[in-house]
Image (cartoon, rainbow, N blue to C red; front, top):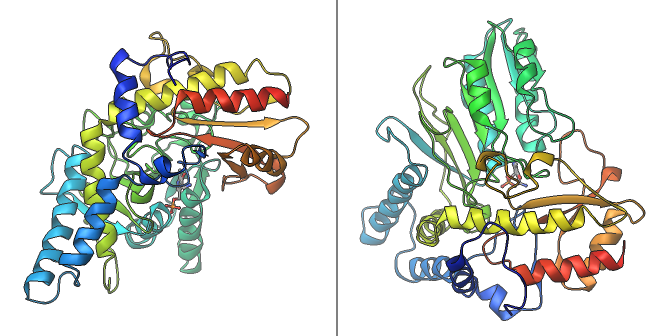
Length: 407
Ligand code: PMP
């Protein structure tokens, strides 16, 4: 298996570590010839998560926050432990002030921030900056908030965060044209789900100044690279992520709110029964990720993505999207600008759904459509390869062989 050259940028012991981590995913070990390359859609689950779910359901399953018997108390305690664990995982410097609200995923989380926090905070003439070329989940709630306010006679200007056309990164040189004294809120993305680039949130914070709330879509970073909130790290007010993309069960996610300005974030309405088993899976997932080491996961997946990008670039008929500064994992490129484990590309003659089908006939599961990108048409279809800790250099080599045969 080690006939394949090491992944660029990885350390010697990363290879043994990765082999050990891969073995912990039952779906992968049961089907070793199938290459799952769609982790940006959802991740596979390690045995520790499956075991935690099984143990919970066979020992303590009950509702949370209600009931006074031991199973109910245990469930409530697990939910509260997960809340604290999310803060710890995000290296929250002020956990007494912040809050964690569980959701079904990033889409629901962003919608909740828009409806329950942003709408009540905006006044006539205010401006908000939102991403028009990121995931639709991070555009629609803000546009909808503007519409809702307009119906109440409150006019809010919803402006586009400027982007650099070639890389998809935000265009920090153009920030001053859109940031003004009435800018009241900014929505942004941490790692782009199509281009795989880090969106350099520190530059955004520097441009908008310390007083404007920023809500960050961290769907593609939590579980893939270290994510640290608060001063010194990501200086944002809300961080929203999907647990299911970070090794937890489907239907999981959270909103972390810093609660340092305006009123604290409090989701409106009766919340009903939480997804207790999903929350338990999130606790196990965060423990697993910390134990495996997110820095190592980042290094591994960035290395695989670099290998794929650098070779694919030289194949005829392929066009790689975004992120040109991130192609090399060499030390001269700051880590924040390197491509994460996502590579999207087009074949000039083969439609993306056909390419997806061909790749599947060789055992590769990739994403092949418009990738839910705001402003993209179905006909813009691209193929996206997105990686996680269980993917191997051998899978990338096999993929490149098939892609080369179609060049
Ligand atoms: N934002 C980004 C950047 C994403 O990649 C995704 C999922 N593809 C979402 C939001 C939506 O996440 P979910 O499906 O968990 O709501």
